[in-house]
Length: 104
Image 1 (cartoon, one colour):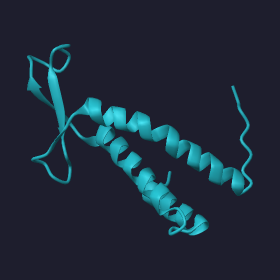
Image 2 (image 1 turned 90 degrees about the vertical axis):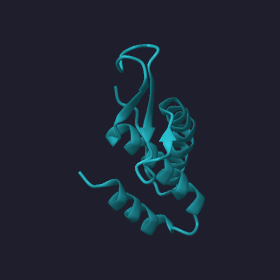
Image 3 (image 1 turned 90 degrees about the horizontal axis):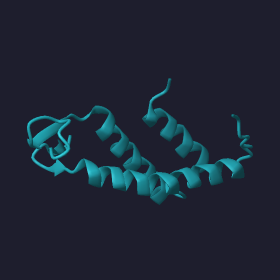
Image 4 (image 1 turned 30 degrees about the vertical axis):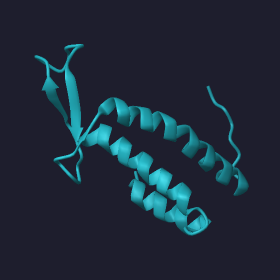
């Protein structure tokens, strides 16, 4: 399986990076959020354990470890960004001749 960066580079070459720079920034932001949930560790701030409903947890920003990121805020950002990016990818794919078929 290819890396996100490789796929993004191919897509930029096909579409033209300058024409869609704002969309590529949104795509990169979405991938950053995905990586945060996929690879960063949660830190227990308050509570006895992670499974405690009253526990407070956060991520440390991978690039600036002193900055903390609220997982709920990151999830809300991801859920807001994902449909926009997906719609853009579908739109440009259809412009290039891709046909989507629903399979069950």
